[in-house]
Every structure is written in C-alpha cells, then in structure tokens.
Image 1 (spheres, chains in turn yellow, red):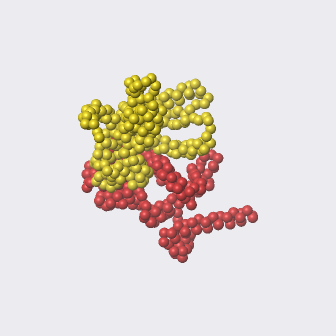
Image 2 (cartoon, rainbow over the protein chains, first blue to last red):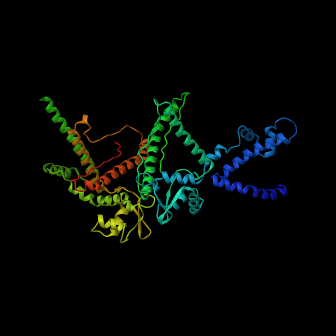
Image 3 (tube, each protein chain N blue to C red):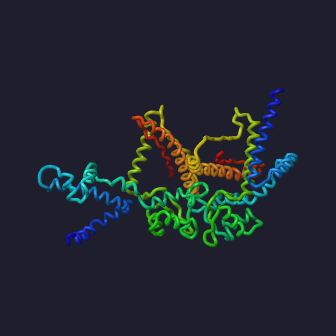
Length: 269
Length: 238
C-alpha cells in the first residue's frame, strides 16, 4: 500500500523535474532514454548516499542498493560497473520519427525515378506526408508528427503545402551537446589530415578542393542544392563501395586497424 | 584467302545473331515470325538509315522531355530553394506551365499537356491550378510501343557508336567511351545493385544533360551546325 505522503511528494517533485524534461525534449532525449538514465543515476546516487550515511565503513552491497532503489540486484551490478548513461538497448530504439525519415528515403512509393525522396504534398495528393506518417508512425496524428519534424528542422515547408525532407535520421538541429561534439570531431579530423600532410608529404591523405566560383546570390540556392545532391550521392556511392572492403576486412581480422573516412564540405564566403 | 572466307562466315554468323536478338524481342512484342521475315526482307532492300516511325512514336515524349528540361535547367523556372518551382497552369504572363506548353506543344491545349505529363509521371497536379515536377525523366513503364521505339533508337545509337569506334584509333583516345561492367550475381544482389546505382546513373545523366544544355545555349554556338549528342546508361541482366 502506497504511503499517503508519497503522492504529494511526487507532485511536488514534478515542479523540479519539469524544466529538466523540457531540456530533454529540446535535446531529443526520449522518455525511455530519460528513464534509463534516471535509473542509472538512482542506483549510483543510492550507493554514494549509503556510503556516506549508512552504517559501517564498507561499501554498500549490491543487495542493499537493490533493496533501497527497487532495482533488481543483477541490474544494480551491471549499472554500477560503469558511469551513469542511457542503456544501449533503450538508445538504439531512437526516435519514433526515425522510421518515417528512413522510409521517406527507402520506400519506392515516396521516391522519384532517380531513387531520391520526393517532395510530398501534406495531404492533398498521394503519395502524401499524411499517408507516410500513418504508415510509419501509427497512433500519432500526422499533423503532430509534421510539427515535431518541423521543430527539429528535419523537414522544410515549401509553397502549396508541400514538404521536403532534409535528413535521413532523427537529429535535432542547432547548438546542442550532440551537434557540438560532432562539430569538434569534424574539425579534429580535418586538422589531423592537414597536419599529417604537412608532416608527411610523401604519404599524403586525400585533401582536394575545387576552385571556388562566384555566382549571383539569387542563384546560390540552386548551386547549394546541386552541391548537396552531387556530394551526397558521391559519399553514398563510395560508402557502398567501401562496405565491400570493410566486410572483407572483418573476416580477416588483424590486430592493427585504421579508421578511414571521407568528408565533403561546402564552403561559402 | 582462307582467312577472308572465315571472316566473311563469322560476320554472317554475327549478323544472324543480331537479327535473331531483334526478332526475339519483336516476337515478345506480339509480332509473328512470318510477318517479321517479310518486314526484314523489305528493310534489307531499302537503303535508309532513317527511323521515321520510331521518331514519330517518340515525338510526343521527346517534346515533353524538352519541356521538362527547360523547367529543370532554366533559372527562371526555379524556386527559392533552387529546385524546379511549382507552376501555375494557366498564368498568362511570366513562367507558367502554359508558357512551357505553348512553346513545346503549340498545337495542343494546356489541359492536354497536363494530362500527358501526369500520365508520363513527369508532373502532378497541385490543387486545381498548379503543377509540380515529380520526375525529370519521362517514364514509359507499361507502354509497349514507346518502349519498343525507345529501344530501337537506343540500339541505333549504340550501333552508331560501335561504327565510329571501329574506325577510330584507340591508341589516341579518339574513340567514344563505351564501357561495360558485368559479373554473375544472385537475384537479391541484383536488386540491391539497382537500388545502389539508380541514383548514381540519374546524377550522371543529369550532370551530362546540364553540360550539354548550357553549352548548346551559349551565344557563340547559336549559329553552328548541331547534331544530337549525349550519353545513355542502362542496367542489364541476362
């Protein structure tokens, strides 16, 4: 039987948790991911709390932490083995809209004759965004899915209630932890290649660029779109070609491994 | 002397192979063997390299492709994102679908051209009075006669390139590129192959089309004699 004060306490805690939930929403952290993170934090904090305030000088046992947190002792052991993080199983589920984005890039019904995702009518004309949302995010209103994708910057609204997809995976745009980490990684990769080429010109890594062109700013959107489609296509092709090489290398696993990649970057001044 | 006879015989056997391949294809389109033999005999007596009937069948789709080309390539027909704009059907002034229809189908009504474009899956209607480009390629899928005519024109172009290359000096890069890749693969791998290479092929064609379109429109080339030139790519499975 629940203690009567617990409900009131939980209600009071909501006021403290709400801003955190808003932050999670902004960062694209789903409820299962947040729950997984909270459970880890609960277990780690309980051990720390028991160490400080519990009886005796020894570290609290997993059983004791389990008793206090309500998490099974097997999970407690697993959770305490590493720093608090979102469990991989929860993380892999990703955002529900990811399925829709993937389908928009793969389901023949939503592709043009070149195999690229079509611009879709919101609902007037089939194939529409509504039919796509109903098929791949069942149980959610297509209008809400569209609003969420717009908020995340993953679709672009065009004239005549048409929608264009901007990304294949669910990833929030703007300044957030994940994007800043990626920015750092990209900058590091580029600097490593440039530094390598300065130090070892006899074994350079590929680093080429075309001569920049000057265009009327009114034509810039066309050039940007052209670069995005050509470069995206080229990267997809080389990824497919190298996948064969990578699968062969997995079979002949040697201790010395190298991560090789290619990044294409548009520049504009 | 013996070598010349052998070459002659081999050439005849190759000719028989080519005729056989063409005959089998034509039979699959519903033509009977006896009638094909009569048509082949009549064609053998003629000395024409023209394919007037083929051109007539493809004329409509050719004009639709040219209209699409202008929609894709002419900056005036692009929207703020750089892609082909949604066009008003009947707008009298400026860039509209009516303007394209009048330029490429002067003898037809705009409504007819919209129907034709929708049927060829090049465009789709947006509400009552607008159209959007959905494919920059005219699709014949499911239509036997245009597909046959398209195949005939492709064969003619391929043989034209082969004819040029047999006279060219390969050591001096005078020949026109004609490359093939082929390996035996499973049906599953073939499906994946199509998925992977469809965008690559489309981009290559789009890129070459843009180059040709822009070069053809340069003022310095306007009055020069011109002949159709291009690039054709297709996936095959034997």
